[in-house]
Length: 252
Length: 245
Image 1 (cartoon, helix red, strand yellow):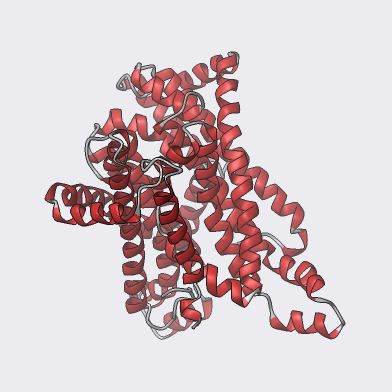
Image 2 (cartoon, chains in turn yellow, red):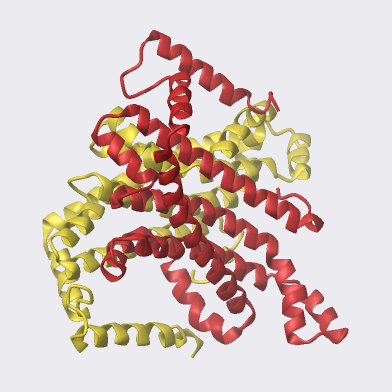
């Protein structure tokens, strides 16, 4: 019963949408009917050029995210475990944290060109912050008793890092990754909307300017599903790797 | 203080030295950027753009944050609302909200309203989720003590639930404020007649690199100042709670 409760919000919203679409009060451009949106969605998955756009967006998002994950986890670990690296780099990251990195995009276009590279670079930069900040918190907060015990039992520095520090920081690392992954998709979509000839963000703007709002909404549904699926995949991976601590979230 | 900023200063010095050696046209040296920025501060246009941008980001942030706090706390304490609302919110949480901008432009026009609402939508989520978890993680023993001492429902909410959720709410507000600037900038880059995002687009298209950096420095300062103000407000409001980790 309680699982059906969300339908109390979703169903009336969908019905209201369909009624608004059929009432004739608004142009079908403003409220295209759900049936037309669904048809566009079906044709999205049957056309290879649309799937290609989805793939372009996906690899940009995952490319930037993957690079940021590799660099961010390493950097966060070093900042958390080495006092002088932390003292040196912490102010750099916390000082520029609230600055919208998106504003660098026009400069990135000049530096990296108009294609994928400037977008991947911006995704990398935006994703780096949450990953570094949360990872370094986790690495810094490792229980000292565990470190002492490991040393006492003769563990080398490398073994301590691998067997104590990394597992202790793992929940934090995944928390940072989970913040960063939707950011990756947001940045890709925005940059494709602003300046591009390909990708889902471009497809949204292109559909709008050719007044195909049903198609635009179908693309929005695809982007939404993509964001949801990426997050779900990351949470599944996390629960496999960090099996000793269940993630406290609502919908997993 | 000086030692804390040493990495930033070292980076700026390196950058300035690199400019002596020769940089491409589109990368100005820190000293040049500062010169252009100071010159722009003397013009009226910059303030018009700042006003237009803040006029979108701040109302959007305020609406999103107010709704997020209200609904998040409500879903945190009411089981019925929790069951109906929270799954919908959590399901749509990882969806990039900026994709709604074109739809909002259709519904609410291409003016400021659609931008304010898209910013509000983006800001709503982090605040909702933090207020929700903050309210839910209220220690039961505090609620029981208050009940035991004869507090009513409303009083428990006001004097127990809200204070214990407050640190998390501030954490959500901090994320949302940063997000409001990002979405504002994105929306202005996509479509606007004024504002800092539009300024950087115009500068880009006319190869006015000086204006690009003026816009960049301005948005950086605004973002930093907003974050500092919020941290100060948190410090004042939650003096009893100690500094965050």
